[in-house]
Length: 117
Image 1 (cartoon, rainbow, N blue to C red):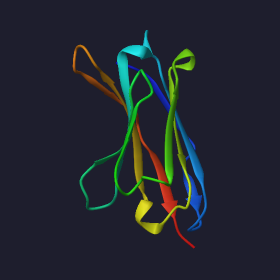
Image 2 (cartoon, rainbow, N blue to C red):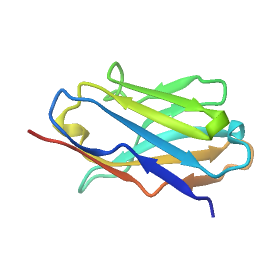
Image 3 (cartoon, one colour):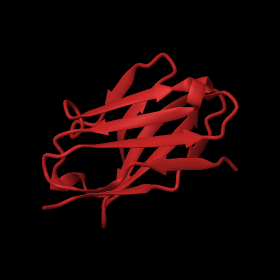
């Protein structure tokens, strides 16, 4: 088991910003892709953003131009800066560490993001 600490979720008005943070107690985070997923009520969990050890990134179409994923391997942390938030961004956001060699995944407990006026 890996202990995760996620933070930064909350209630924000449309057009606002939030920054999610996630740290995980893994030995060497440079072995992992770090990802953010989200799950809205009644919908499947979807990938929002991913960042590899060489800091290359992938974004869902819905996140491009608004969200920025970053990582700090010294802190075994991943961040998601979310700007220009919309009501469709309302979901529980989960961080995920994917081990690139072994293929297994660790998941955070999730943090709620609600975009509403």
